[in-house]
Length: 254
Image (cartoon, rainbow, N blue to C red):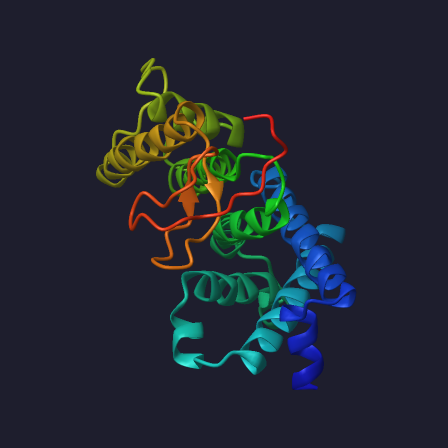
């Protein structure tokens, strides 16, 4: 069983690739579902859907636990902790018979998975002509925006009359991130102000990372055999770090 799971999660064959693609799509769809239903009353068929998602996430956690080498590090991972809390929040109706509001809010922890998806996208684009650094920076920025927007919505929508919908929280996050600050929506409580500071400090960092990836000359990933430096200019013939000869395959258009 462990060998089968390792093949599915880490194997190079088409079966493993197909399985990991299915997991990727599941992550994307569940993140979209939680965002779209952030301010909806969850009942009836949506409760059943939440329970189904919780069972799938629990099965994924169990499988990854069985094949991991360092189980202490596995449980210390932010993604693992977020998924554990998510499972509890989604399966709570099976035990309590209800659908408590504060537990529904915890569904937004699934957005932590957004940062994990960036790694998957980078692997997918490996060997292509797409500038992976731009895709990486853009994906991290988008993930940050939606994670923080969900935090703003969960923490503030019941105490701030200006936040009627998830879109209002997204609008506040974007205007704060870009330092536009129209002032029509503000977080006046202490926790809200601390969150606003975090959005400006960390958000500007993600935004600058994207600008640097766009305007800096694109690099070619070709590890140097001597020192291991991975990124080089497209027309480089020697490693800038150690001076060794490197061989970069090109199509003659640089």
